Amino acid sequence: MRPFFKWLVAPNEKPESLLHVIGWWELRRIPYNLIVGLLGIVSLAMFFLFIHLARELKPGEDAVEPLAIIFAPIAINILYTGGWISELLLRIFWREKSPHIGPILFKLGISLSVFAILLPSTIWFVIWIIRSL
Image (tube, rainbow, N blue to C red; front, side, top):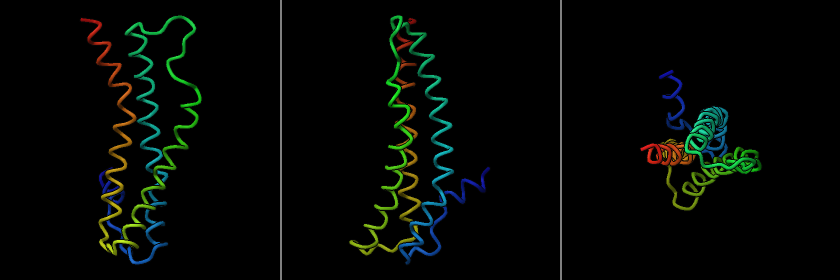
Protein backbone atom coordinates (compact mmCIF):
# COMPACT_ATOMS: atom_id res chain seq x y z
CA MET A 1 0.00 0.00 0.00
CA ARG A 2 2.91 2.33 0.75
CA PRO A 3 4.20 2.26 -2.88
CA PHE A 4 0.72 3.22 -4.07
CA PHE A 5 0.57 6.31 -1.84
CA LYS A 6 4.15 7.16 -2.75
CA TRP A 7 3.16 7.06 -6.44
CA LEU A 8 0.00 9.06 -5.74
CA VAL A 9 1.98 12.07 -4.52
CA ALA A 10 5.14 11.58 -6.60
CA PRO A 11 6.34 14.71 -8.42
CA ASN A 12 5.54 15.05 -12.11
CA GLU A 13 8.59 13.89 -14.07
CA LYS A 14 7.71 16.01 -17.13
CA PRO A 15 6.08 19.19 -15.82
CA GLU A 16 7.26 21.28 -18.79
CA SER A 17 4.39 20.08 -20.98
CA LEU A 18 0.86 21.22 -20.18
CA LEU A 19 -0.48 17.89 -21.45
CA HIS A 20 1.83 16.05 -19.08
CA VAL A 21 0.46 18.13 -16.22
CA ILE A 22 -3.10 17.19 -17.13
CA GLY A 23 -2.05 13.57 -17.62
CA TRP A 24 -0.43 13.48 -14.18
CA TRP A 25 -3.71 14.62 -12.60
CA GLU A 26 -5.96 12.39 -14.69
CA LEU A 27 -3.94 9.27 -13.79
CA ARG A 28 -4.80 10.04 -10.17
CA ARG A 29 -8.50 10.82 -10.67
CA ILE A 30 -9.76 7.24 -10.25
CA PRO A 31 -7.67 6.53 -7.12
CA TYR A 32 -8.80 9.89 -5.71
CA ASN A 33 -12.44 9.03 -6.43
CA LEU A 34 -12.04 5.61 -4.81
CA ILE A 35 -10.46 7.06 -1.67
CA VAL A 36 -12.97 9.90 -1.37
CA GLY A 37 -15.92 7.70 -2.38
CA LEU A 38 -15.19 4.92 0.10
CA LEU A 39 -14.55 7.41 2.87
CA GLY A 40 -17.77 9.20 1.88
CA ILE A 41 -19.81 6.00 2.17
CA VAL A 42 -18.36 5.25 5.61
CA SER A 43 -18.90 8.85 6.73
CA LEU A 44 -22.48 8.85 5.43
CA ALA A 45 -23.23 5.64 7.33
CA MET A 46 -21.73 7.15 10.50
CA PHE A 47 -23.73 10.35 9.90
CA PHE A 48 -26.99 8.35 9.70
CA LEU A 49 -26.03 6.33 12.77
CA PHE A 50 -25.15 9.33 14.93
CA ILE A 51 -28.14 11.40 13.86
CA HIS A 52 -30.35 8.38 14.69
CA LEU A 53 -28.65 7.83 18.05
CA ALA A 54 -29.06 11.53 18.87
CA ARG A 55 -32.82 11.06 18.24
CA GLU A 56 -32.88 14.14 16.03
CA LEU A 57 -35.20 12.99 13.25
CA LYS A 58 -38.94 12.88 13.58
CA PRO A 59 -40.82 10.10 11.74
CA GLY A 60 -40.89 10.79 8.00
CA GLU A 61 -37.99 13.26 8.03
CA ASP A 62 -34.93 12.77 5.86
CA ALA A 63 -31.47 13.13 7.37
CA VAL A 64 -30.06 14.41 4.12
CA GLU A 65 -31.35 15.78 0.83
CA PRO A 66 -31.22 12.81 -1.61
CA LEU A 67 -30.13 15.10 -4.46
CA ALA A 68 -27.07 16.10 -2.43
CA ILE A 69 -25.91 12.48 -2.44
CA ILE A 70 -26.40 12.31 -6.21
CA PHE A 71 -24.60 15.59 -6.98
CA ALA A 72 -21.75 15.22 -4.48
CA PRO A 73 -19.59 13.03 -6.78
CA ILE A 74 -20.11 15.48 -9.65
CA ALA A 75 -19.14 18.45 -7.47
CA ILE A 76 -16.09 16.59 -6.13
CA ASN A 77 -14.87 15.88 -9.67
CA ILE A 78 -15.41 19.48 -10.75
CA LEU A 79 -13.30 20.60 -7.79
CA TYR A 80 -10.70 17.94 -8.63
CA THR A 81 -10.42 19.38 -12.14
CA GLY A 82 -9.71 22.69 -10.44
CA GLY A 83 -6.48 21.11 -9.20
CA TRP A 84 -4.91 20.73 -12.61
CA ILE A 85 -6.40 24.02 -13.79
CA SER A 86 -4.73 25.73 -10.81
CA GLU A 87 -1.43 24.06 -11.59
CA LEU A 88 -1.63 25.12 -15.24
CA LEU A 89 -2.39 28.71 -14.23
CA LEU A 90 0.58 28.74 -11.86
CA ARG A 91 2.82 27.42 -14.62
CA ILE A 92 1.55 29.85 -17.26
CA PHE A 93 1.07 33.13 -15.39
CA TRP A 94 3.65 32.85 -12.62
CA ARG A 95 6.08 30.79 -14.67
CA GLU A 96 6.43 28.36 -11.80
CA LYS A 97 8.08 25.19 -13.16
CA SER A 98 8.59 23.11 -10.00
CA PRO A 99 7.57 19.44 -10.36
CA HIS A 100 6.22 19.64 -6.79
CA ILE A 101 3.29 21.96 -7.53
CA GLY A 102 0.98 19.10 -8.51
CA PRO A 103 1.70 16.96 -5.44
CA ILE A 104 1.29 19.97 -3.13
CA LEU A 105 -2.06 20.89 -4.71
CA PHE A 106 -3.13 17.22 -4.72
CA LYS A 107 -2.33 16.82 -1.00
CA LEU A 108 -4.16 20.05 -0.22
CA GLY A 109 -7.18 18.97 -2.26
CA ILE A 110 -7.42 15.50 -0.78
CA SER A 111 -6.99 16.93 2.73
CA LEU A 112 -9.83 19.41 2.18
CA SER A 113 -11.98 16.64 0.66
CA VAL A 114 -11.42 14.36 3.65
CA PHE A 115 -12.17 17.23 6.04
CA ALA A 116 -15.41 18.10 4.20
CA ILE A 117 -16.51 14.46 4.05
CA LEU A 118 -15.87 13.76 7.73
CA LEU A 119 -17.25 17.04 9.08
CA PRO A 120 -21.01 16.16 9.18
CA SER A 121 -20.48 12.76 10.80
CA THR A 122 -18.01 14.25 13.28
CA ILE A 123 -20.43 17.03 14.23
CA TRP A 124 -23.25 14.54 14.80
CA PHE A 125 -20.92 12.29 16.78
CA VAL A 126 -20.17 15.21 19.10
CA ILE A 127 -23.88 16.12 19.34
CA TRP A 128 -24.73 12.51 20.18
CA ILE A 129 -22.02 12.36 22.87
CA ILE A 130 -23.18 15.66 24.41
CA ARG A 131 -26.83 14.56 24.42
CA SER A 132 -25.86 11.19 25.90
CA LEU A 133 -24.19 12.86 28.87
